[in-house]
Image (tube, rainbow, N blue to C red; front, side, top):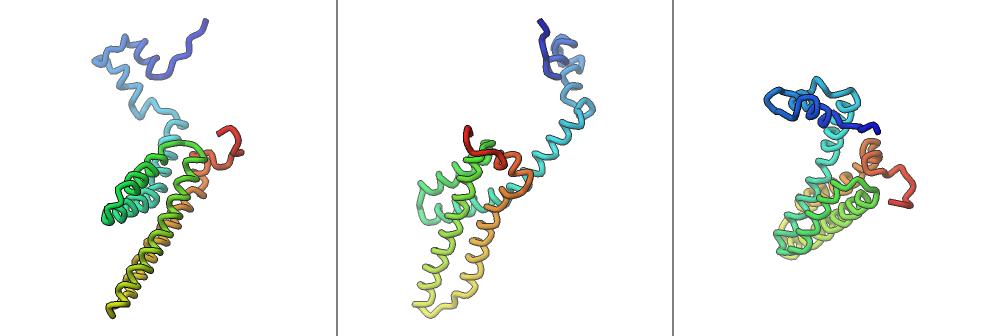
Length: 163
């Protein structure tokens, strides 16, 4: 029977697992990485960069809910951020829905706040521009999942059955 070992297990077996002889350290070093490992690390780094707007949108939304003492929605915002770690299409779709609902919340807040300011005769144009920009940023963040790397990572190109 042939036993297949990972590179870490091979290094451990070849060098009796002693960290002093450097076997394990060599297995973890960049020199021992293959081109496919480097490609995977690069893809993960690029995906993380692509998800920064999504995470920022959800954090700002959580702060908005926190300011209004809406703790259940703060928790939901953080749970949605946690869904980014699940490599399934349904997780990505839930994040997209949350970002879209967040944009609707920003528009609702903008209309409400502009109405209050208008009642008191205060200017509200800047408020509408800022909150409109935040809503647009949230919607654009939902489109992050249309990028090739995100579609592949979250398996969005595959048929939906069996996920």
